[in-house]
Image 1 (cartoon, rainbow, N blue to C red):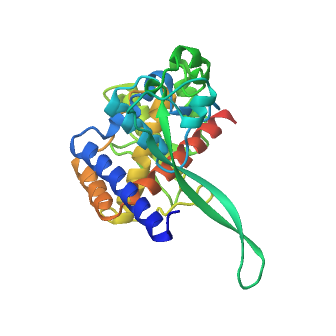
Image 2: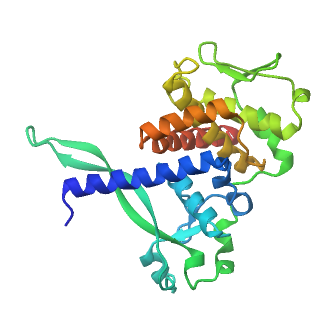
Image 3: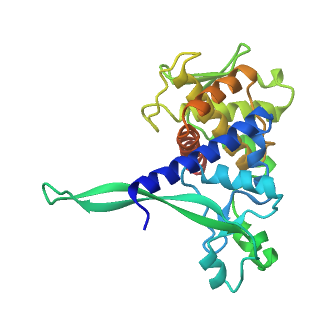
Length: 290
């Protein structure tokens, strides 16, 4: 049985490995590629339950592994689930470790009262390409509503209840006035560039204190500002896939260097940013359905 020290060391090593991969992608100019495997079949899902892997940085981790291995289908499962489905993992294949996040209840040693705690644990999943299962038998699992039709993209963004103003040549969100400002659509090379940037700014808007309550007080050049920009960029990439836009980064070298600075100092940063970006993306998706 692992000791507490061993478990903490394992978590640190895992975070460092994931962070190193993200940093490498950013430095190679390929940070937007981790969502590109989703364009055809959507986000990574469990082949048994059909559920999307939402916790922490799980989508990012599975997306990066799909790029590394050139896997086509975003279908994953544990060794046991594959066995229960009548399949086997191919010899010498290695799983992808991801994190399960949940809640548990323990008894307070002093008062005896029960209290709720957050729990997390590792488990490995295998892509369907690593098994003898036929992906074509599981296409119903990935016939989902992750993608909008091109005709629905405009409706998606127009359904957002945020105050949107147009003018000038700068896209931004003001958390004090709670207003998103965008240049006119005609100022963008392509209409999809406009919507991609709008997705970035709407991700910022989800952080307002009346919504998801993120720290939006950072000034340009600060660590907190750079961290929020990383959240918004991750959120924009996720929204691009959902809305059928080509996933591309919205910012240049200055922003990218600020992200690298954060990630190299804090191996937990990419996990927190991915978690918040996913919350924002899900929040916006639910707003569009309302």
